[in-house]
Length: 288
Image (tube, rainbow, N blue to C red; front, side, top):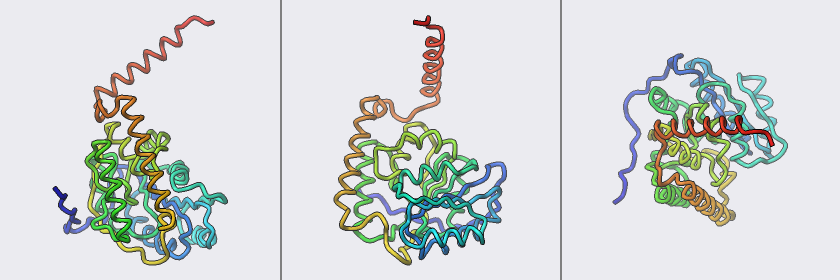
Protein backbone atom coordinates (compact mmCIF):
# COMPACT_ATOMS: atom_id res chain seq x y z
CA UNK A 1 0.00 0.00 0.00
CA UNK A 2 1.38 3.42 -0.95
CA UNK A 3 1.49 6.17 1.62
CA UNK A 4 -0.61 9.23 0.92
CA UNK A 5 1.62 12.15 0.00
CA UNK A 6 2.09 14.59 2.88
CA UNK A 7 0.42 17.95 2.43
CA UNK A 8 1.59 21.28 3.75
CA UNK A 9 -0.89 22.89 6.13
CA UNK A 10 -2.77 25.81 4.61
CA UNK A 11 -3.40 27.43 8.00
CA UNK A 12 -1.98 30.96 8.32
CA UNK A 13 1.51 31.01 9.82
CA UNK A 14 1.96 32.69 13.19
CA UNK A 15 5.25 34.51 12.58
CA UNK A 16 6.39 35.07 16.14
CA UNK A 17 7.26 36.28 18.56
CA UNK A 18 8.41 33.03 20.15
CA UNK A 19 7.69 32.17 23.76
CA UNK A 20 10.80 33.08 25.82
CA UNK A 21 9.93 30.24 28.20
CA UNK A 22 10.81 27.74 25.46
CA UNK A 23 14.36 29.05 25.27
CA UNK A 24 16.50 30.61 22.56
CA UNK A 25 17.43 29.15 19.17
CA UNK A 26 20.80 28.67 17.49
CA UNK A 27 20.51 28.64 13.70
CA UNK A 28 23.32 26.42 12.37
CA UNK A 29 24.21 26.41 8.68
CA UNK A 30 26.90 24.02 7.41
CA UNK A 31 28.42 25.51 4.24
CA UNK A 32 30.63 24.13 1.48
CA UNK A 33 31.12 25.83 -1.90
CA UNK A 34 27.96 27.96 -1.74
CA UNK A 35 29.40 31.35 -2.71
CA UNK A 36 26.52 32.14 -5.08
CA UNK A 37 23.62 31.44 -2.70
CA UNK A 38 24.89 31.75 0.89
CA UNK A 39 24.29 35.50 1.11
CA UNK A 40 20.68 35.10 0.01
CA UNK A 41 20.21 32.27 2.50
CA UNK A 42 21.66 34.22 5.42
CA UNK A 43 19.86 37.49 4.70
CA UNK A 44 16.51 35.71 4.41
CA UNK A 45 16.92 33.72 7.62
CA UNK A 46 18.28 36.62 9.66
CA UNK A 47 15.56 38.90 8.28
CA UNK A 48 12.78 36.46 9.12
CA UNK A 49 13.95 35.18 12.50
CA UNK A 50 16.35 37.77 13.89
CA UNK A 51 13.76 39.96 15.62
CA UNK A 52 10.99 37.36 16.04
CA UNK A 53 12.90 34.62 17.88
CA UNK A 54 13.90 35.62 21.38
CA UNK A 55 17.56 34.92 22.22
CA UNK A 56 18.63 34.09 18.66
CA UNK A 57 22.08 33.42 17.22
CA UNK A 58 23.39 32.41 13.79
CA UNK A 59 26.34 30.05 13.40
CA UNK A 60 27.88 29.47 9.98
CA UNK A 61 30.25 26.51 9.80
CA UNK A 62 32.24 26.65 6.58
CA UNK A 63 33.83 23.36 5.56
CA UNK A 64 36.93 23.76 3.41
CA UNK A 65 35.34 25.52 0.44
CA UNK A 66 37.39 25.90 -2.73
CA UNK A 67 35.32 28.70 -4.29
CA UNK A 68 34.73 32.24 -2.94
CA UNK A 69 32.56 31.13 -0.02
CA UNK A 70 35.13 32.13 2.62
CA UNK A 71 35.47 35.67 1.22
CA UNK A 72 31.70 36.11 1.09
CA UNK A 73 31.30 34.95 4.69
CA UNK A 74 34.11 37.20 5.96
CA UNK A 75 32.34 40.18 4.37
CA UNK A 76 28.91 39.17 5.73
CA UNK A 77 30.28 38.69 9.24
CA UNK A 78 31.10 42.42 9.29
CA UNK A 79 27.62 43.35 8.05
CA UNK A 80 25.35 40.95 9.94
CA UNK A 81 24.94 39.46 13.45
CA UNK A 82 26.43 36.08 12.57
CA UNK A 83 29.28 33.95 13.88
CA UNK A 84 31.45 32.44 11.16
CA UNK A 85 33.80 29.50 11.67
CA UNK A 86 36.12 28.78 8.75
CA UNK A 87 38.03 25.59 8.05
CA UNK A 88 41.07 25.19 5.80
CA UNK A 89 40.49 21.44 5.52
CA UNK A 90 37.50 19.55 4.14
CA UNK A 91 36.01 17.67 7.08
CA UNK A 92 33.00 16.16 5.33
CA UNK A 93 29.38 16.93 6.17
CA UNK A 94 29.04 14.70 9.22
CA UNK A 95 32.15 15.90 11.08
CA UNK A 96 31.59 19.51 10.02
CA UNK A 97 28.04 19.39 11.37
CA UNK A 98 29.16 17.86 14.67
CA UNK A 99 31.74 20.62 15.07
CA UNK A 100 29.14 23.26 14.18
CA UNK A 101 26.73 21.95 16.81
CA UNK A 102 29.51 22.40 19.35
CA UNK A 103 29.41 26.16 18.75
CA UNK A 104 25.68 26.43 19.52
CA UNK A 105 24.84 27.99 22.89
CA UNK A 106 21.02 28.14 22.91
CA UNK A 107 18.61 25.45 24.22
CA UNK A 108 17.38 24.67 20.69
CA UNK A 109 19.38 24.13 17.50
CA UNK A 110 17.82 24.83 14.10
CA UNK A 111 19.99 23.05 11.51
CA UNK A 112 19.38 24.09 7.91
CA UNK A 113 21.15 23.23 4.67
CA UNK A 114 22.66 26.37 3.16
CA UNK A 115 21.40 25.97 -0.44
CA UNK A 116 18.08 27.72 0.31
CA UNK A 117 15.81 24.88 -0.75
CA UNK A 118 13.80 25.63 2.39
CA UNK A 119 12.29 29.08 2.95
CA UNK A 120 13.04 30.88 6.20
CA UNK A 121 9.35 31.58 6.84
CA UNK A 122 8.68 27.86 7.17
CA UNK A 123 10.49 27.83 10.50
CA UNK A 124 7.11 28.80 11.91
CA UNK A 125 5.66 25.45 10.86
CA UNK A 126 8.09 23.80 13.28
CA UNK A 127 7.92 26.31 16.13
CA UNK A 128 4.57 25.21 17.72
CA UNK A 129 5.93 21.70 18.27
CA UNK A 130 8.70 22.90 20.57
CA UNK A 131 6.18 22.64 23.40
CA UNK A 132 5.69 18.90 22.97
CA UNK A 133 8.63 17.36 21.08
CA UNK A 134 12.41 16.96 21.28
CA UNK A 135 13.13 16.53 17.55
CA UNK A 136 11.11 18.34 14.87
CA UNK A 137 11.78 17.31 11.28
CA UNK A 138 10.71 19.38 8.28
CA UNK A 139 9.43 16.75 5.85
CA UNK A 140 9.82 17.84 2.21
CA UNK A 141 6.35 18.09 0.66
CA UNK A 142 6.98 17.41 -2.11
CA UNK A 143 10.71 17.04 -2.71
CA UNK A 144 11.98 19.25 -5.56
CA UNK A 145 15.21 17.50 -6.46
CA UNK A 146 16.25 15.59 -9.58
CA UNK A 147 14.24 12.37 -9.97
CA UNK A 148 17.22 10.12 -9.29
CA UNK A 149 17.77 11.81 -5.90
CA UNK A 150 14.09 11.54 -5.00
CA UNK A 151 14.17 7.83 -5.85
CA UNK A 152 17.37 7.15 -3.92
CA UNK A 153 16.07 9.01 -0.88
CA UNK A 154 12.80 7.07 -0.99
CA UNK A 155 14.70 3.77 -1.13
CA UNK A 156 17.06 4.78 1.67
CA UNK A 157 14.22 5.82 3.98
CA UNK A 158 12.28 2.64 3.14
CA UNK A 159 15.32 0.52 4.05
CA UNK A 160 15.71 2.34 7.37
CA UNK A 161 12.03 1.82 8.18
CA UNK A 162 12.37 -1.89 7.33
CA UNK A 163 15.55 -2.58 9.29
CA UNK A 164 14.90 -0.35 12.31
CA UNK A 165 11.09 -0.45 12.49
CA UNK A 166 10.76 3.33 12.71
CA UNK A 167 7.75 5.27 11.32
CA UNK A 168 9.53 8.24 9.72
CA UNK A 169 9.63 9.02 6.00
CA UNK A 170 12.18 11.83 5.56
CA UNK A 171 15.00 11.05 7.94
CA UNK A 172 17.65 12.77 5.82
CA UNK A 173 15.89 16.14 5.76
CA UNK A 174 17.95 19.34 5.76
CA UNK A 175 15.46 21.31 7.91
CA UNK A 176 15.37 20.24 11.56
CA UNK A 177 14.81 21.82 14.97
CA UNK A 178 16.27 19.88 17.90
CA UNK A 179 16.82 20.36 21.61
CA UNK A 180 20.50 21.04 22.17
CA UNK A 181 20.82 18.65 25.10
CA UNK A 182 19.41 15.85 22.93
CA UNK A 183 21.92 16.68 20.20
CA UNK A 184 24.81 16.76 22.66
CA UNK A 185 23.88 13.39 24.18
CA UNK A 186 23.33 11.50 20.91
CA UNK A 187 25.53 13.18 18.27
CA UNK A 188 28.85 11.73 19.55
CA UNK A 189 27.57 8.21 18.83
CA UNK A 190 26.61 8.98 15.22
CA UNK A 191 29.13 7.48 12.84
CA UNK A 192 27.82 4.43 11.03
CA UNK A 193 25.80 6.08 8.29
CA UNK A 194 26.83 8.59 5.64
CA UNK A 195 24.08 11.02 6.60
CA UNK A 196 24.10 12.51 10.09
CA UNK A 197 20.39 13.26 10.46
CA UNK A 198 19.14 9.82 9.42
CA UNK A 199 21.28 7.99 11.96
CA UNK A 200 20.58 10.63 14.60
CA UNK A 201 16.80 10.22 14.18
CA UNK A 202 17.01 6.44 14.59
CA UNK A 203 19.17 6.76 17.70
CA UNK A 204 16.87 9.43 19.15
CA UNK A 205 13.86 7.19 18.47
CA UNK A 206 15.34 4.28 20.41
CA UNK A 207 16.44 6.66 23.16
CA UNK A 208 12.77 7.44 23.69
CA UNK A 209 12.83 11.03 22.39
CA UNK A 210 9.63 12.59 21.08
CA UNK A 211 9.97 13.05 17.31
CA UNK A 212 7.55 14.56 14.82
CA UNK A 213 7.63 15.12 11.06
CA UNK A 214 6.01 18.33 9.84
CA UNK A 215 5.36 18.80 6.08
CA UNK A 216 7.10 21.90 4.72
CA UNK A 217 7.50 23.21 1.16
CA UNK A 218 10.70 22.25 -0.63
CA UNK A 219 12.07 24.23 -3.55
CA UNK A 220 14.30 23.42 -6.49
CA UNK A 221 17.87 24.60 -6.13
CA UNK A 222 17.98 28.12 -7.60
CA UNK A 223 21.67 28.31 -8.47
CA UNK A 224 24.71 26.06 -8.51
CA UNK A 225 24.64 22.31 -8.08
CA UNK A 226 24.88 19.77 -5.29
CA UNK A 227 28.33 19.43 -3.73
CA UNK A 228 27.69 15.83 -2.60
CA UNK A 229 25.49 13.87 -5.00
CA UNK A 230 27.48 13.96 -8.22
CA UNK A 231 26.19 11.26 -10.54
CA UNK A 232 29.75 9.94 -10.98
CA UNK A 233 30.00 9.22 -7.25
CA UNK A 234 26.50 7.79 -6.68
CA UNK A 235 27.61 4.15 -6.61
CA UNK A 236 30.18 4.81 -3.90
CA UNK A 237 27.71 6.92 -1.87
CA UNK A 238 25.00 4.26 -2.11
CA UNK A 239 27.42 1.45 -1.21
CA UNK A 240 28.76 3.31 1.83
CA UNK A 241 25.24 4.25 2.95
CA UNK A 242 23.95 0.69 2.74
CA UNK A 243 27.06 -0.75 4.37
CA UNK A 244 26.74 1.73 7.24
CA UNK A 245 23.06 0.89 7.65
CA UNK A 246 23.83 -2.84 7.89
CA UNK A 247 26.66 -2.28 10.39
CA UNK A 248 24.42 -0.15 12.59
CA UNK A 249 21.57 -2.68 12.38
CA UNK A 250 23.96 -5.48 13.38
CA UNK A 251 25.22 -3.41 16.32
CA UNK A 252 21.68 -2.62 17.48
CA UNK A 253 20.71 -6.29 17.17
CA UNK A 254 23.78 -7.46 19.10
CA UNK A 255 23.02 -5.02 21.92
CA UNK A 256 19.35 -6.00 22.06
CA UNK A 257 18.14 -2.52 21.17
CA UNK A 258 15.84 -3.68 18.37
CA UNK A 259 14.24 -6.32 20.59
CA UNK A 260 13.85 -3.86 23.46
CA UNK A 261 12.29 -1.15 21.32
CA UNK A 262 12.27 2.58 22.11
CA UNK A 263 13.54 3.33 25.60
CA UNK A 264 10.82 4.14 28.13
CA UNK A 265 11.16 6.06 31.40
CA UNK A 266 11.31 2.68 33.16
CA UNK A 267 14.17 1.55 30.90
CA UNK A 268 16.05 4.78 31.61
CA UNK A 269 15.60 4.38 35.38
CA UNK A 270 16.89 0.81 35.32
CA UNK A 271 19.87 1.84 33.18
CA UNK A 272 20.68 4.73 35.49
CA UNK A 273 20.48 2.50 38.58
CA UNK A 274 22.78 -0.01 36.88
CA UNK A 275 25.33 2.73 36.20
CA UNK A 276 25.16 3.95 39.80
CA UNK A 277 25.60 0.38 41.11
CA UNK A 278 28.53 -0.23 38.79
CA UNK A 279 30.22 3.01 39.86
CA UNK A 280 29.64 2.21 43.55
CA UNK A 281 31.09 -1.30 43.24
CA UNK A 282 34.15 0.06 41.46
CA UNK A 283 34.71 2.66 44.18
CA UNK A 284 34.34 0.04 46.98
CA UNK A 285 36.61 -2.51 45.36
CA UNK A 286 39.91 -3.04 47.28
CA UNK A 287 43.02 -1.66 45.67
CA UNK A 288 45.23 -4.18 43.89
